[in-house]
Image 1 (cartoon, rainbow, N blue to C red):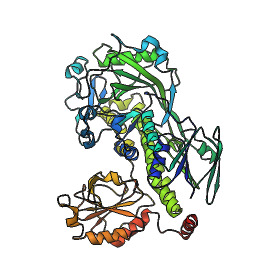
Image 2 (image 1 turned 90 degrees about the vertical axis):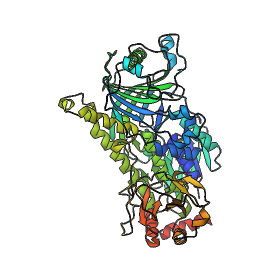
Image 3 (image 1 turned 120 degrees about the vertical axis):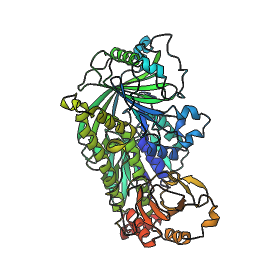
Image 4 (image 1 turned 90 degrees about the horizontal axis):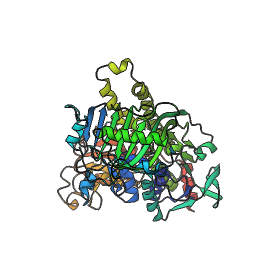
Length: 618
């Protein structure tokens, strides 16, 4: 069968290519550019736990080598600390000899991932000597992220000390978001693709036409490598101005310039190393239009990304104005004295909210910014784009290997578009409340803390604004049966990353078994971690469960876990290849397990699909 054609070589397109290759599906990536990315520290991305794990699984590289996990989160209003959250280090991070720096030196991103556009302001060279702060110039900070809360004396002298009730235990067991430059993420994906025999990247290839047939799709590119490309499917990952979307005549309604930010990346020393900060209504006087909000997010090597929320309108952000804003902000956080700093990059980030009407047109699909734009209030467009790729990859792989299954392919739009639409609705409902500029609402007791909670959810990937979506209403959800049993994970939601015993007897994390195109069946069996696999693999219910797994309509892997949140002993979990829970059954129920697996695959295979599969293999 012909390869899958992927248009666009950004993070989403490259992730999809790697995810397909891991499932033995060849693909061609049409890259309009030269095959390398401009290094811009003012363009950064934030990855939540699930998307960071996806990238690490596909690249085989720990993202701590390229990014930064923050140690905590702090939000302030005027001089008051509203919320303080400490994050626990991941176990994998503590295995590194650089554990102290990794565990206490994470970061997050401001809205620079895919949800909008960046307008360059000329970079650091446009500022000349003004790019350096006071003192003898910028030097690398001697204070590392080992002091995550910063100097108490520094905070007190700046008048920014925490309040008694500001400490928040919500993040104590939550993993820290990963913050890294977008070019570093793309570079890691490109490096992994070099070693993939099933992926071909065609640089300098600009798409200009698409033709569909019942058996495949043909794309034409112009440029030095202009040619016709034949594929089984085509996925447009070509950004906000998607050529694929335009060629398929798919509308892209929404709102333009929902928010605008002035962005600066600089190397300096702040009183709270390793901790991200959201500061609303800062108390110091500013040059030019007032900025009601500024965020600071750490990167590696004492680099920070600072974002200032701009007032509505199209006022020009001049270099002089931005330098003044930098100096005023740093002085406000350092008791009136501007510390030495080195300005590395600048930009203006504009957030748009848009959602494509359709994400599928026959054999053509949309993903990432080609399908949706979001990014207000700390939400992350790239996070959703990577989830698009993860959702689509296993469905395309099944269709490629076993013939098209319309219900399965249609579920991509049904699941992912619903999740992104809910995210956009939540942001659009919160924006008037948070950006109204005061009014009577600002005098309601507790309103400031409620606003802070909303913004924290968006930035930390929690609640309606940020939490990974669940596919509870998916067309792939099986019907309810009496054998279902409740666990802490709702059907359709991402599973918890527990330790499991694999079929070869090794202990691995559940997420490590995802993305291989197979269903996962997880038996909860307390005590199995104590005894060697050979002692229990043929005992009790295991032989019956193993037979039921072998009989499933799609290849599946049987795993065993000591425990799972909310699950009783002998609970059987059925998990999709992208890590979402299908169902939890009480004990071994072969018929119910088979029915759930069949529904997850889109129902019984059609005669047409079987005939096409047979024809493609002859």
